[in-house]
Length: 80
Image (cartoon, rainbow, N blue to C red; front, top):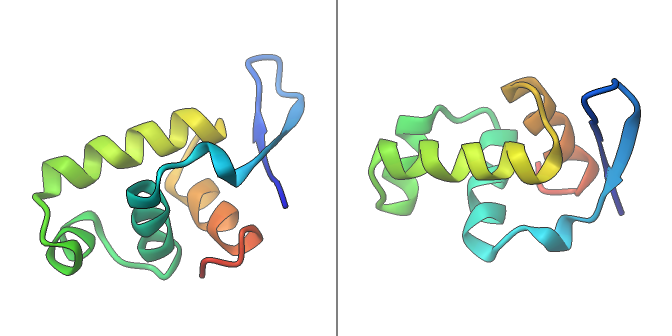
């Protein structure tokens, strides 16, 4: 299973979801289900800032440029 991200030169790259931690997968699952950072934080008993930190790390690891890319990746991984 892989999610396509983009490199700086706009070529698609395949990403293995195994690069994410369990917590990052939890965050991605909820983002993919349409929850806001605040809602994700409330569900996981974490601050909004912590969720933002995880989201930035997930975007970096998956080469995702936007929240919409994260939702697409969550769906590809079968998380949402």
